[in-house]
Amino acid sequence: MFLSLAVILIPVLLIVWFFTRTPDEPNIQQVDWTSMTASARSHARYPVLAPAVVPEDWRPTKARYANRGDRWVGNTISAGNRWELGFLTSQNVYLAVNQSDEPRRAFVAAVTRSATEDGKVTVGRYTWVKMVSPDGRTRALTTTIGSSTAVIVADAEYPVLTDFAQMLTTS
Image (cartoon, rainbow, N blue to C red; front, side, top):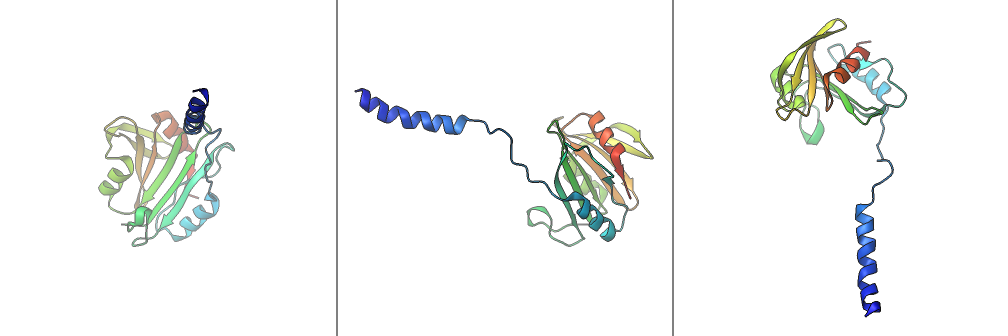
């Protein structure tokens, strides 16, 4: 009876252990955001936002640019010249700046998960519209820079977004 129980119990315990263990640190693929920023700035028809420097413990996870008509995420076609730059902070908060010269309303709705206006804040030389998603989880700041709409988005409170906005420059 003990042998029969061991034959069944040992594989079950191994399966439970394998599927319930937590990895030490997720494997996050980092990208070279500085060269992609330079490339976007040379191709875009508007001033491209990006930080001059970021804290050493931030991990750049996205940096991509597409011209109008190019393939974008999920095999969609970009409706405008589009820029996206995202970082994972040391507190594992994802912050991204999205920018495009496509129609403002559709772009903001897509990037902010159909967020609604939640006030305004001035950061540096720009006045940003604060936005919050219907479920209250995602917050965003939007503004117009040149012929583009810029959106900073995060699953964090507004002070985190305004701190990130202060880091952004167009050169």
